[in-house]
Every structure is written in structure tokens, then in C-alpha cells.
Image (cartoon, rainbow, N blue to C red):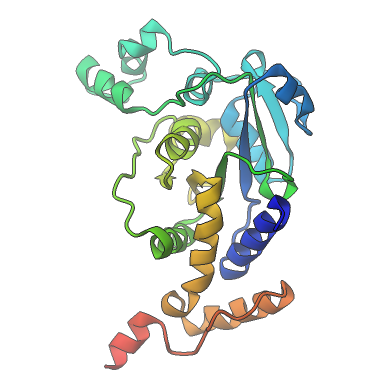
Length: 265
């Protein structure tokens, strides 16, 4: 099956199983100028933070940017567009934010922020449905209920993810992109004050990032776990959406969610 068809099948499975309002985003690292020029989206017109690029992609707009077009130092260092500065590495920059008790705590947080261990020329963000090739990372912005189901789908396929990393800072660039890519695992983010200000996410929205290959399997896990996880009313809606997307019923039956069966025993 071609990459675009694999992605479409996964998107159909997860959007039939869940009520996801925003488009799912694919992130592609562009390692050379040639790759950047061939990337089939428009470059940003002016400096733009990476998280805003992701926000625009959730609404259907794809963009690409180089270091010169990147409007946030957190994003440039997390994605591998530039090396962290000495001021950042010392903890002094973080200590100036008013988010940490002292320099030692700020330095501890700095030491635990994940950066991509590569050097890239640029980055592309666009809806996953628009890719013909496999992106590197997939980002889903949604509410806590859907986040629960996505974690359940991941666990269905891979077991417990024991190494979530979140600090409420560098949320989209590090927690949703760099860490999932470097660890090859799923991660959640409660977002950070910066991206909530710059991108205007609603207060109930949170982010999930995972490598593309694991997104494909996680979407299947969400789809296959509907019978055990969802209440009857949701199952009725999901079965109709599966029909609309020409997807087979994976075995969805009334009163078979584990918590309903337990309550009747």
C-alpha cells in the first residue's frame, strides 16, 4: 500500500473512532536546501514560531521555514535548526522566565529538555492528509477524552508508555516533536504558556506527538479498542462513521465495554 493510502486509512480509522475537530498534522524535517526547495508548501512570509506553523496546519495551511524565518528560539534549538546558546545551556535564560525557583532548578529543566540530535535546513508542517511521503512526526491537538483514547490505542499496540516527558515549556517543539522523534515513542503535552499565547489554543486543548510509524499503529489500536472502551451511545455514532468511510466494523457490540460488563457482574 502506498504511503498516502496508508496515512488515509489511519486517519479514517482514528477520525471515525474519535471526534477530532482539528486536522492531524505531519511534520517533516528538511535536511538540505534542495529538500527545502522541493517541499510542496509555501515558505512563511515572515518570521513565525514553529508552534504557530503547527496551529495553522491544524486548520489546513501548510508552511515551511528555515532558521531565518523561525520566530522562536525554543523551536529553533529543539528542532535542530541551530545550537543552543551558552545562556540557555547555563540555565540563565530559563531562570529569567520566572518559572523556576532558582538557577539550579532552571538548569535541571534545561538538562532534561529534548533537542533533535541533528542539523536541519528547514522544517515543513502541513495536514497529514496532504502528504504523499511519510512525515517524521505526527501531532494531534485535541481534548483530554480523545487523548485518553489515543493513549489507549498506543497501549493496545505497544503496552505501557512509561517515559512521558512534560514540563509545561517548549511544548509543541520539544514535548510534541523532538522528544517523540528522539525517543521513538508517544508523548503528551499540556502545552505551555508561550504556545497558548502565540497560537491561541483553547483552554481545553492539549497536544500529542508520536513518530509517523507509531501513529499508523496507534490509529489501528484506537479503532480496534472501540468495543472495550466506548459507551453504547458513542458506539452507535462510531458505527455510522465507519460506514461513511467504508471501513469494516472491527467488532463493536452493545454493553461490551469492560466497565459495563464489570458493573453487571
